[in-house]
Image (cartoon, rainbow, N blue to C red):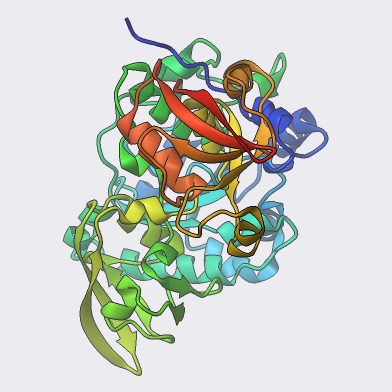
Length: 441
């Protein structure tokens, strides 16, 4: 028998923690206001992807599809700039522009991107070929950030690819989406019962809206509900190249700001000031394109990289060490909250830093995760029911005793354990060891 996990919506995630993304006060009004403002806008084809593709084919222009989660306050700044900034007008005029505010019926073979972002963009040819993706975690973290430098450069890079099309089509093959279990989000079992294909403008429109992050949740639930391990790329989706030791400038396509000593990037000879122009053979338009390449990369192996340095083109390769994805920090992703319910019953944990470990008599190499939050409702209350408490320090679970981050332990548990299991765990409470069972859902 399949075990069905009921995933929390964004509203529930917000109720369980004050650390999730803030939302606008009038969510319903934000959605209706966007419709009233832009439904007949001469530039933006509002919520009409099919019409946008038809227009792109007839005009020969590339297609720009902006996906915006209106109730989420994050990325409000760049969204306002994209709609209102006069300097962007000549650039946007070179595209057929589409604005999408809900994910209900997205064609998932085309729209594969970072579902945890509240502002994303994909640039297409009219025939459906993807030129590139854009999405900014800088703007996600700061809703007041209105800078469009990186977006502008992404659009220019996409135009350059468009000018070379279709001669460059083979180089774009890796940018295209892969197979999905269902064609649209509302066909996933975890969403089908609650969400219609069209928004309910005659009722409570917000209650009928599939948010982008719910798409990622639905993918993970699909595997979990079939009693299968979640694929690692869905536990650590669209990973940052920081995992390989590179910090990229937030105002450029893919310019290196710094490289960590001893990292995979350092071993490949990457230097500050280098500009990635291709990764795994794919031309890049933004940092989101870099994350897409990593999202589709193997668990280990070699990743070809082309860089520009001082006017010269250099070919190198990034070696992906085994288990590299588990180094990715997913702690601030909205999509991580349902995974916390799956992996350990709805808790949030932080690794205890070295200086505090010394005062507690804890070794630097042992597991020591302080429980910062214990959920109270639904699947997020399973840990509470199992006896876990806020401020407990987790020092053992299953076969794990070594030092590990919350992000890494989520991956380990979801990859190696299935719903219904109860793993032996040990916490320190008031300096004493307490043995518990950690629920897997």
